[in-house]
Amino acid sequence: MPIMRGARGDAGQQARVTLSVASVAVLVASCAGGPSPSSSVPVASETQWRALRRPRIDRLADAPRVTVAEMILLEAAWASGGEVSASVGLQELISAGLLRRADIDFVERRRFAAAVERQRRGLPRRRNAPPIGTSPGAEFVLTGSWIPAGDSAALDLRLVEAESGGIVTSWRTLTPRQADPTSLARLVVGSTIGRLRELGRLPPWTDPRADDVAPAPVTYVASLVSLEAAAAFVTAVAAEDRYDWEAARRGYQSALETAGPTFLEADEALARVARLRAGGTLGGSEP
Image (tube, rainbow, N blue to C red):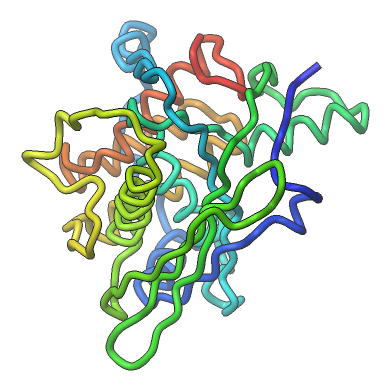
């Protein structure tokens, strides 16, 4: 039986992140129709798939187990038109930013919870879906809101204790009103890392990519990842949710080709897809 621990109540009772950003609206619109940005990427051979299957980074001892709560857009028009909403795309950007770290034990919750519910209802596993596996459960649920006001916006974040539902810490960071999704996701990751460090919950770790990119800033830093690349990422998320591994690979590789190797979130998600395709489980992507 899968193990699933989390905040009290069902998914509808979980703390939610509210986002209201014009660049996300553009991202969703670009995903809504037209040819796929990854349509020119050829089908991968098994040799290429093996090359993409980078092992998940080993977590450090005492790394806190963190998951990301569902994110909600209040403006329905911004979240319509695509297979995956802009809010889910942002959630996945944050998740990929946490997944690549050794000082955080990221707990995948969105796909795992859906698969557990499907099994509970006695439904067959979806085509090409990996086994459910087991989840250690999260210690902390990351949640918050992004509220524009004038030319700026307030990013309010909280770490919630999964077992009790109590708020462990909360904080506010200012961003430009026109902040792009990747920049917002990285700021969420960076400020969360900062708070966990202040709480004494973070083991020491040096990010090997911190010198050539700001993957987890504590204040707002423009990511320079284009909306086109972010749209390709969201397209790949939709394919991964369908367990269409080839389409997901094409989408993430298209995102990398568009943005370059500094799009660390797409690179991490691509490796995850390769691991899941090779036999990983939803509880842990290692094959």
